Length: 222
Image (cartoon, rainbow, N blue to C red; front, side, top):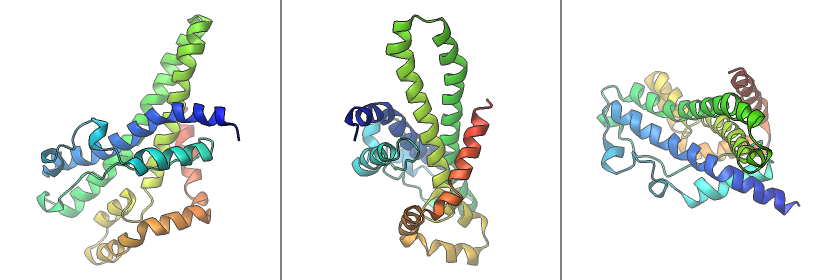
């Protein structure tokens, strides 16, 4: 095991991982606030202060271990969930679905911005900068932006699996008729176990990684 490579992976990925999971959660709360639910704002969760959002296991340890062990090809993590009270919405089913979708949409936007910075600012700068600047500043920044792209795309796709409590499950619940939505919501206590089983058995590979690769190809066209 190359510990030097692992340390490098950790240093490169820690900021992108925290940015991805924290902005993911803040976006849930902000969109919910705009739709009429002030719960997250009243509890001080509409902030970019990491201390308000970090969960040691979900924000740091789990994503770092997954990212390092997969050599950057897979990551999943979470921050402390932002509280949302659907009873404050004018249309609870619809607005809950919109609030849930905000997290993955934010991750895709972060990935798009990272790609634009990498291709249209960092790459041209590397062509004209001194070698020492490229080595000490631009190359590490490029590695962080590449990590940011992959991390955010993977988190977005993984979170849109239509199984509650993942965001995709909440979106689907909001779109289904009442009876079917209630049936789907009963899966929530077992949702993470189902998702872990899909990942461990590699069943998820057949519908997660093709979507990730497709989105990455689209991003490289920006």
